[in-house]
Image (cartoon, rainbow, N blue to C red; front, side):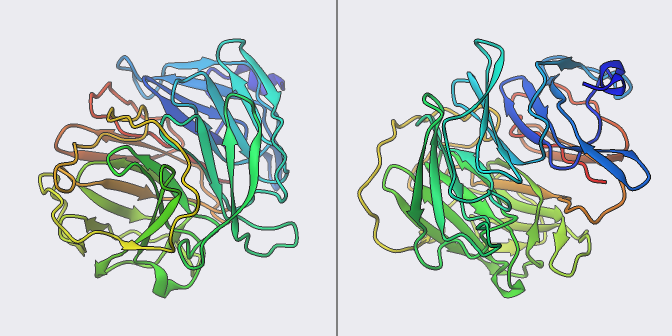
Length: 365
């Protein structure tokens, strides 16, 4: 660890950092930091941010943890029980896993056929597994498969085929778990602008992929963004679009209306049509049902002939490596409102909230 890192009481802003949340802790590890004009390097920093108490932006409650592998990452996943933090590198075929019991990092036994550049890991509820779909092959082609990673063994099941058409964008997307839908929810990624209305669902219990072909006035497809999920609607306040620009208009998808709308309304309940169904499922996998809100990624109502309180996904200001500004972001949830704050070169105060859904922080050089 460098002297600069040792002297820091907070993580340095980094591109490609791995991040995840569990209960009242937000974790950030690794990434690439700028150390001079045109000079950058990977960092081994690993920090937790305490969300259980108020703190000022000038002195956030960061906690330094055991040094992480010096790598850039495409994402991270936290186990349902909070015992493991798994990172997926952007230039290798091996995952790394941190144990909160032993306080150690280990390279996992998982060996991926291709680098996972462009893919994103999502924990599949309380099943003890992580789904990693798409990404790029070693030759730079779109990867038409998905892997299942197991927290307890650090091993993975390789090369499950993705059904044709169910995940139009297979790199640069983001995914989160919905306990109400019992599914992983995918949105965004690189691809044709005409496909920007698609939202993909994966149910591990039935091993079935479904798609929501949304209607209404949708913005261009965004990619390399951050997302959070809650109860009422799908929001995209802006991100990188295919033309390489940062979009700023807020687009809102209201599941109860099955349409992109102009006003955010958290009180509407889902009564719309069921999602379009993908190809028939293969042999079902098993997953224990759990109606509790997931820790760190979701706060959602119960299902009663639909979703009582629909799903909210927030995607905001993702970055490739092209932007030249460092930005941090925090998302603040209350029971009926959402506040998103953006502030250059500063960590933001984040109070404890019962309905906190997901805090994601991403910086770029």
